[in-house]
Structure formats: C-alpha cells, structure tokens
Length: 124
Image 1 (cartoon, rainbow, N blue to C red):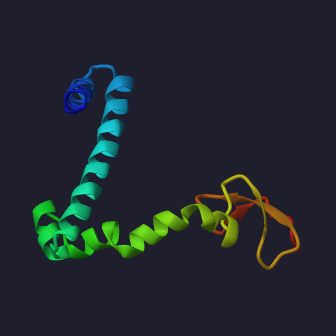
Image 2: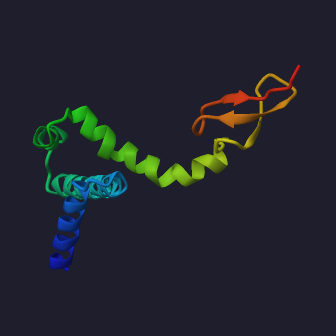
C-alpha cells in the first residue's frame, strides 16, 4: 500500500513539471486535493492528541483563526450540511429559474449558490 502511494505521488510530481499544460495542470489539481486531505488528517490527529489551534497553526504557518475556520467544528457542520442547503435553504444552481424577489417575473440565477443575483427579469 505504501509503495503504491509513493509511486502515485512520484508520478504526480513528475507530471506537475510536464511541458504539456493539460498534464501539468491536472497533476497540480490532483496534488492540491491530496494535500488538502493530508492536512485535514494531520489536523484531526493533532486535535485528538490535545494540540491547541495555536500549536497547529504555528506548524502550518497560518493564523489560529485560519486553521480553526478551515478545520474547526463549524467547518465540519458546513460539510455535513452542504447537500441539504440547496434543498432546504432556497439555494439554486446557476442557470435554474428562480422567483425574483420583489417582482412578478422569473429570472435566471447567475453566479454561485445563494448569490441572489438574477438576469432576464420581466417583472413589473
């Protein structure tokens, strides 16, 4: 298992220096995902061993507020509820029809979830 992981990491590192932008950018994205998962794992490990947010932050070279915001209890709640938000809080995907607040027409939602911006409004 460890040997396979080492080979994958080496292959990603090699691909990230490719002269082909398609290969290089895909490798960078894969490495970024791997790094995020590794950071979350180690932060959870440190918290389980009693480390403070300040101790963790200083090792990562960020503020304690940044590490707490990214890995603290609120972040876990946000991740758990992400799928529920779109259904229960009125969030919509870009391009879906939404009732425009204060108007009688329908518009297309622009931007990300919950942005509230609409175009194509025909209300009056």
